Amino acid sequence: MKKRAIFCRTLLLAAALNCSWMLCGADPVQRVHLIQDDAQDYMVSRIYRLKYVQANDLVPFVMGMIMRYNINSSANTILGANNEQLLTVTCPAEMMPYVDEFVQMADRNIKIAGKTVDDVISGSGITRAVYQPRYRSGEGLLNVLVNSVIGTGPAGAVYAYDQNSNQIYWKDNSSNTPFVFEFLSYIDRPAPQIVFELKLYELRESSLRDLGLEYLAWKNGPGLNIFQTAFDAFSLNSGGTAALQAISGPVGGFFFAPQFDASFIRMLEQKGKAEITNTATLSVSNSDTDSYRIFFNPQLQNIVKNNNDQTSVVAGNLNLPEGFHQLYLRIDQPIVNIHYGKGQSGYPDSEVFELAPYKDGLYSQYPGTVFFAYSLQSATVMERSVSGEELVNSSVMESSVLLDLNQEFVLGQWNTVQEIEQTIGVPFLAEIPILKYFFSTTTTQKENCKLYLTITPRLLNTAHASPVPAGELFAIEK
View 1 (cartoon, helix red, strand yellow):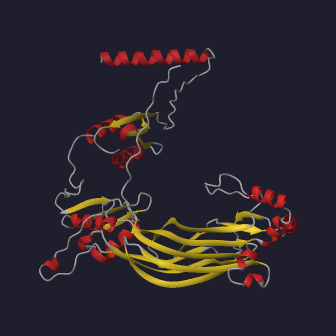
View 2: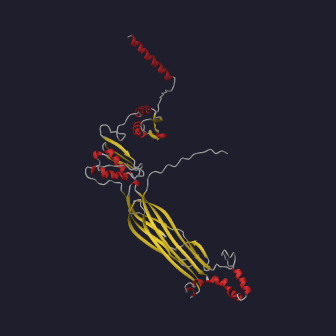
């Protein structure tokens, strides 16, 4: 009863105070405190330096974690110096501790089964491998591999090709992977290239004989005084003087020098032999459609005369039509056959299948043959006129040949034999034997020219050349 009385008194006192406050005229005020939250997370970034794993391997897992928490999160990889693996993560601050914990657990030094060729994925007997071709397209090698060896793929094997890196990836049985590596290393070899060494041999033999008196020079020179000499011969004084003047030098030494111009006397004989060699090389590839061309256009000298009988030495001009050359060779569809295989033997040796990977310079160690068609065109000088104009003879040879490698063969041969005899002097008198040399000049020229075109096919040596020596710096003192 006592407690109930105290409670009633308290209520009456509160009601009285409330009534007095309302009677005073004060406005009622209600205070509301609001806390605004628009679900915006504070983003932070961090860079992880990975020691054991690849950054690309962790990105999918990190993205799955942070994107579920906030769609604006991101994760990227950076390849630093010396192949340093860097992982950058941007996510809310509340999520970053979980990322730290995951990266710490994932980046540890453990052996991953199936990472190398010899390792097998645990419990499956399947290996993963990658091969990067050195000489051929990975797509072409993959087609040969799948169509000839793998087929549809045993036990669910998967083979793929990356166009950007030219790499072949596959997942196959552990017993097949070493064989695939051996097979790819065997067929991954450069296409054979042939180097044709062409040599043009020119053998020239010539002889020149010039004998007699040049009648015009003699008539216009010493021949003008022929009658005066005969008239003075009646005088003893004149005859003695002429005899003394005709002799010069010591008589006992048989040295005589006439005191007049004797250039009209022609007595000349000379012989010569020349050997000229021109060399050129032509590199071609195996092809059943392409053609390769090479030509020679040597600049030879020629002696010409103008209208005033003045001679000059100029470059020979054969006046060939367009598209013609002095020597032109076209090689069509060259195919080389390398003899590096082994002969078929009987059982059980015939069942042995050995593969040897390609090494630089391997092609040059084996013999072989090369087959090609060719068209050979030539234009040679057959005759030259008195004024130096050249008469040209052109010919074309076409055929197909099968040649052994590393041996020289004659592909074409041309022979030219010329014999020219020219007599200049007094008509009728120039036809009398022996006497003709006093009234004319006879020039006899013989020339024998032989041209040989040889070809030597060789396989291009793909071995790396010796490295270029590094440069050295020296201090220069003033």
